[in-house]
Structures are given as C-alpha cells and as structure tokens.
Image (tube, rainbow over all chains, first blue to last red; front, side):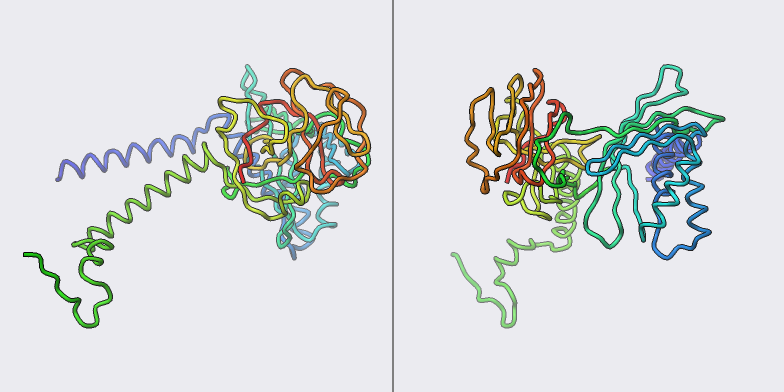
Length: 187
Length: 178
C-alpha cells in the first residue's frame, strides 16, 4: 500500500513537472495560440465599460500588431476595408467600440504553420463575433501572418479567406451563409 | 418448490423488480452506474461526437425552409469515407476547422459546368430538376462556372438569401443526416 502511494505521488510529481515545463517553456505553436486567445480577449468588450477602459483595451489590442501591419478585410455584404499600420487598427478598434454596446470575439479553430526559421508563422483561423444578449453570430475565416519581434509574436498581415470561392448567383438579397455551430466549440 | 412472497406493505417495488433495477447491493450498483455514465460521457464527448457524428445547431436562413434557424442536426463524418458526395446532398463545410461550418446543398459535381437561369439550375447546359426545393424563385442568374476536378458547387435552398460558390473536396466535413 505504501509502495502504491509512493508510485502515485511520483506520477503526480512528474505530471506537475511536465505541466510546469509546458507553461514556462511553451512551444511556438502554443505561444501563438495563447497570443491569439489574448487578442480575442482584448478585442472583446462588455457593455457599460468607461471611455478610459475602452481606450486602454483598444490600445492593448493594437499592441498585438506590428507598426506596419497590413489588414485586408473583405466581408460579404460590406465594403472592403484596407488598413495599414497599427494606428489605423487602433482607430478601427475604437470606432467599433463606439458603435456596439458589447462584443465577444473568439477564435475557435486555429491552424498554425511555422516558418522554417521558426521566427515567422502563418495562421489560418475562424473568427467568431457575438454581441452578448443577441442570438446572431458573425463568423469569418482569416489568414494571419506573424513574426517574432523581441520575443513576442506580432501580427504583420491579416486577410480574409472566402470559404466559398468564385461568384455567387446574381439576383440574391443580402447573402446568408447559415453557419452551423458545434454545441461543444473546440478551443 | 418455487415460492412467491407478496411485496411488503408500503414497498414501492416488488422484490424481483428492485433486484433488476438496482441490484442486490445498491451501493455497488450505484458505483457501477457512475462508472458507466462516465464511460458513456467520455465515449460520446471525445469520440462519437468528435469523429463520427457532429451535433450542430443551425443558425441563419440560407437553408430555409428545409432546415430552420436554431434547429439541431448532426453531420455524419464517415458519410464520404467510401463514396463521393452526390448532387442534392446537404453537407457541412468547414471554415478553418469544424467548430463553425457552413451548411449548403451540393448542386455541382467535379468537372461540371454550373449556371443558373431564371432560378433554374443548369448543369453542362441542361436543366436539372431540384425536387428538394420547396419554393422556386425566378432568381438567381449566374453565368456558367466550370468546376475543377476536385471542386463542388454549393448553394442554400433559400436561393434568394444564400451565399454560394465553389468548394474544394477537403472542405466537406460530412453529410447532414436528418
């Protein structure tokens, strides 16, 4: 019995050590994944937050991008948006906060391809945005390009991906993609 | 000699039913039941609902009235393991992954040329009947689109309010089953 307890304790210590190792020394993929989840949190905001808090979190969101970031967003039913530089990203982040009462951003699917130098990465992900209290969701596929700057992964290019390529038939009203969503969204 | 004893006055179940339902040792039965429940939970959550059938909640009107907003359905992932998707199949189409999918009907198969005229589907220049459509609309129009060897053309049943386009085979997660 004593022996069994010793073995169990040793196994728990090894498991704890492994977990600590992964937290303290994450792989590049895990580091990128963690950064993107932090970005989603920074882009999200709750209703009733003050101007200073909103400006602070917008600034925090902008810090995930390089100073010369290129953003090309082309969403169905909206004018294409082209941004260059962190300041323009910051302006858009601020503007979205003034238009919406609240927003929750998530990246439920993240596929990471590391560059050969392990200092750059391409990420294909799904962005999901919901306004708390409302049922509708917005979902869009994106390609991000990241590079490691001073030990931090920063986004230097963002572009939308059209899941359905080629043209859609004419004569339609505003298109609806009818996303279907897992009950158990994977992280 | 077989005997049958009457249930004690006030007992909720006869003795044999009690044994069938909760066993001779209820505590042991409870432990077994908990283990079984945990096993089923793990089996469904991490295997069946991940690799075989994906439970989905439908959001939007692109497949209306065949599938209604906020409805619940399943995507069978193994449907195209030994066969290819067919025209008329309703499929789940992944974005970056299967957490959020588009739900569309396949109307064009690899190598075909797809067009729409007055809401009628033309495949390689010939009109194709679409029995699954409950409402025919005079729109949409679309000039012919030639599909690649690994491409499908998908569109929602609510033709006036549905996105449409080509998708590669590897984007099809599975077939919507109900």
